[in-house]
Image 1 (cartoon, helix red, strand yellow):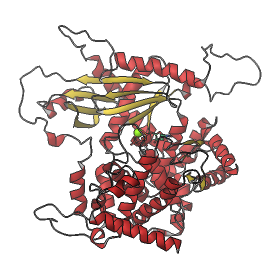
Image 2 (tube, protein in one colour):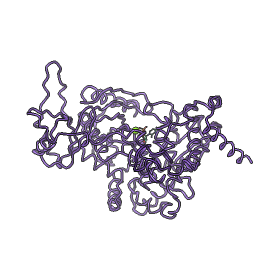
Image 3 (cartoon, helix red, strand yellow):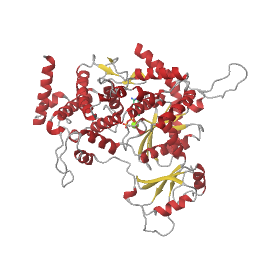
Image 4 (cartoon, protein in one colour):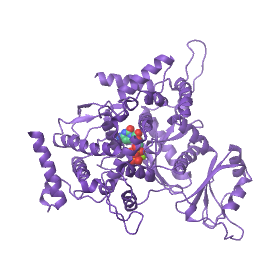
Length: 568
Ligand code: CTP
Ligand code: MG
């Protein structure tokens, strides 16, 4: 109960009515953080949104002459940045230095003609380039100039990792290959900005912000684009009414609940996206979900999009994850490694179902890092205390996420740098710890503990195979969807990976292929990404019936020995 009370107080401060003052307060801390090369998520959002407003998305032909194209666009003003990418054809993202350039460009854009199809006359910053003159073959766009928007295939990643000399380097290399690029991040904000142009037809002051893995620092190329229709600036939540005298308020239509309002807004915006949104296809309104959403594919960017509204808790957990990821680059690397491993073995999937989600996995990794001795990242309570201290000294409310500098200064890492023996050690222990912790969960569901970012295991409030508390809503289990067989499979895979990492032939570079001919022999992390021997099993019983390979025999033996040791 004490724990819950604290969370409530923390929530009240961070999602309360004082956001406006907090933002002003945050600006000061942002300045000091930026001097140290670190940005708060709030600053990142503001910068990227502003860039996106000055950008256009243009479908080009591969015969486009790059120089001619730039010369043509430059007539409207200075271009800050541009890049090309491929998605159902070649596209260009062009960011002008000034907003006026976009206005000037759009003034000269034609409405498409057409013989048998009629166009919905909704104008947006998604354009098509027509080349009316003769095709000039010099300086044409080639595949090389296109920025990748998807990750390298797993086999290529395995080869790349096998060439690295240490597990540390493998982990860095994996993160490097998978993380979102600067260009991909810009494109995500541009898609939000294009959708905002649709929503502002009804709600002129609204914004559409990306959340989840697009911005929390843990997103890989190709991840979905979670968006929040932010109506807070309109709702007047932050406007203080005078205590006496006259004042006016808007007459507004009312609905039974906040949820009903969200549903009706998303229903209308979803309809507009479907009917008017260029490039938006396969629109589905999933309004009866716990968190109502509109799902669709944005073809020009290739993003699978989820648009939600009134989802402040998700935005808060995004900020929290971003903050944890910024504490030390190794936090992100470990999360990337575990997410990649999970995807390679089908523990996670792009299709919704009974599997563990990336969000749950991330919370597990953070929990693991909180449980080290000494802890590698602070618990939520610790963050709350830090926020409290700073709040006191600055005599103003505070959005803790805007003050990462305070956490670096007082993080356990600063006091005990030797806590990290390198991510390899962390990964090794992690897999082992998971296997222990999850085995308990799996075999004694009623008694098993629940994970929370309070850094404590608690008794599970419900009978679910896996229980992971939502960091900001203690009553929500983020892994509620996971069924027993999926958890069982996860545990088996963790055990296998832990065992593999303990084998000397797996944990040392094998040579062969490095710098020369032929594929390098997989070792270390690369071995963990190879198809598993236990992946096919659905339950423990079934596995026993299957003929065990030498590798599995070894694995089972080692587990049996461990259990015997524990019993004795
Ligand atoms: N979220 C949440 N509770 C859940 C699921 C999601 O609070 N049960 C929030 C988290 O902030 C999460 C975001 O919604 O980051 C987006 O959810 P999702 O797309 O499922 O996860 P991502 O973190 O974006 O990971 P992925 O790359 O798989 O999309
Ligand atoms: Mg997502």
